[in-house]
Image 1: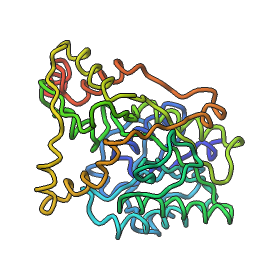
Image 2 (image 1 turned 90 degrees about the vertical axis):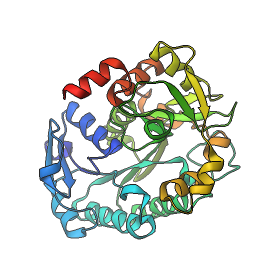
Image 3 (image 1 turned 30 degrees about the vertical axis):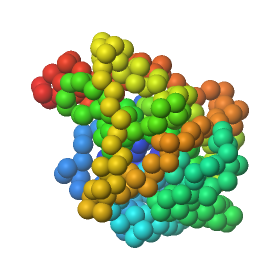
Length: 327
């Protein structure tokens, strides 16, 4: 039973990897986490850190001995070298999973779907990406599908844009608000009236672990969609920020896409943002009917409570800022 509840998390220092590690620990899993430097790894209850690099296949394999699940939540930092690093890392995870008989959990993204994709998005929707990063994500999942033909088990859980108290780099913390600063305005990237999919990370992570705990219901290669919080016209998230901040007149500013275009040749992150702008100018709604059939329901925190926890974690509310300063 101990082996059946042991997982290796790659990317546990990041937003989704760290949240999955916490969810597993809460639910009684034994959690191992790979990091490049144990001395700088964050203290995290229920997580045992192992020094190693996801780019080193031998180190991934050594860390994976005896585990039932490998969580592949690792990404190159700062949007750099995706074309050189992403596929070798997933290949190392596949090789380790094959050797030890583990299932791979991959957090999926909307990048796989290109402009003009029919809505809502189901697991059978055609993946024709509009971005370079989207093409790489499609290749990742293709490699998992190919590995599944020879018995390597994989689970892809696709979700919208992340937000949460420890969400790392994402549109919410790097676009809508400014971490560590009182909420004075919201900068929103979306076009007026266009829906947008959001995923509260604690809910997503808990749902992922619940799926893993229903192994008998999963196919060798399984893909499911997490609906999360669907903002049907781009106003629900902004309204929630206004209610939580206690400021109904909180200023709304549109992201200056034209200025990003001017700076994009010189700033890598702006180039990446422009590449996925279509995800803000078109609606991409996730259909979670398959997930509900498997589990009965998603884990779901009400939007206002999720936004409050996120702002507190980011130090954007007075009590959160005071807590962060004391820490």
